[in-house]
Image 1 (tube, rainbow, N blue to C red):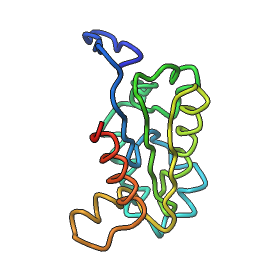
Image 2 (cartoon, one colour):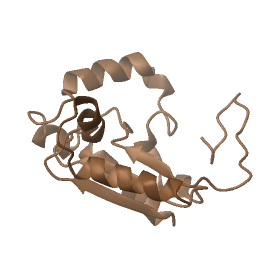
Image 3 (cartoon, rainbow, N blue to C red):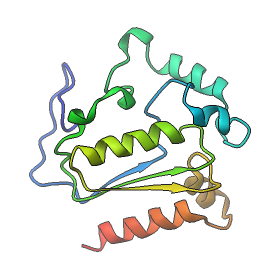
Length: 154
């Protein structure tokens, strides 16, 4: 992480702020307890059983912290993110929706410039699925492509 040095890892020093940070349906919590997990269990592309199995394979329970589960971090953890702008997109039918919404609020409360966009009737990483399948693009794809165009046109 740029803001907080991870033990035994050389810190990254930036000479200037990043033009932007793009958060596409970030996996920030290993819990399946939020309301969106039950509301979207039959709508999203990610079933709860995958979440549990993948989380346990990714990091041991004893090693879970703000780095591996960003949802745990309080507002102060997110102060002074070195980016000109941040886009946080997520699907309305996504199981991660509630946790990602909360993260976006924390980042904003910490004083950062962030646009939080819930994309109704869309699932986890819907924009990536659109581009991989040549399906008609939805709001998530449109927002991400417009945002990237704006960041890279500077």
